[in-house]
Image: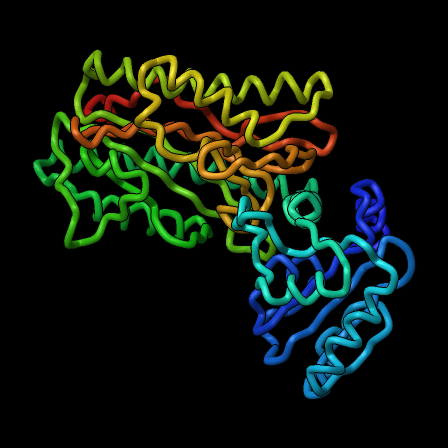
Length: 396
């Protein structure tokens, strides 16, 4: 945590301070930004206030007075609730506007963490509570050069896992031992573990109508056996099993055959054209120094799908922030599920993953790559990009 940098950001945004609040370790954003250990007991409310000018202030309960000892600043201790509220008013000083992990109308749920009652309490002091979303994007989603390298390095084994999954499908079918979606998922999990990769869940292996469900999860009970003529969607995400590992997240598609039907190729090209339009929009704007928002990128991508005649089948945002969590708290590529008006920043990473899901036709498509912005403002992609559906039965 760099107090000076936070104070500079607060000044630029015209905010008097950033008020962190937590109860029972609910705010993972606060834990990461303040570099706190979430494994420690936290049964009482605490506040940490960083003003635009001056030293931070801590407010902790008498039972847990050590709660914020790792952080700089003077400390006030409370016991009765009346004292807690009085001390909170004191540490906020003459502030008129403070940022908290709050989002008006829950527009960005990733940062909408502070409960409404606590927001009411701060507002009762005559203080305007504003969203910390831009601050969170700056201090939570910014990746160092070492972080970006971990993302890039993870692309190598992850692309290999994807390639081996498609080959395993081919090998098994050629041996008259057709695999299930679930078995290929387990094969991928085992291969990732062998390459020191960890993941929260998944991967997704989905054929036909299962591919038309964006978040299909294969299990022993619901799995399909993969056979010739099937359209296969594979979505995998993982990071190296090291402290501070950064996720890599991709989706590729294959067809179980030696040739891909024309109508499948046609729909997939709409998705790849949309992906590339968004990717190129990001690259061009960063190259000329123009600031762009997550919602702007979503608009560019979605327009291609709509113009291609498949807009009703693109049922999720274009992409999400990526960091130590596969779905991070920085700017998302979204003007559908939310209107994410935060700007994309140097040192951030996010997916671009348009999808076309047609359950009535029992097919679904998604193509996904990760864009990372270097700290000197260049938009790059790690690993190969898919343009043609893999002909699975042509694989060795």
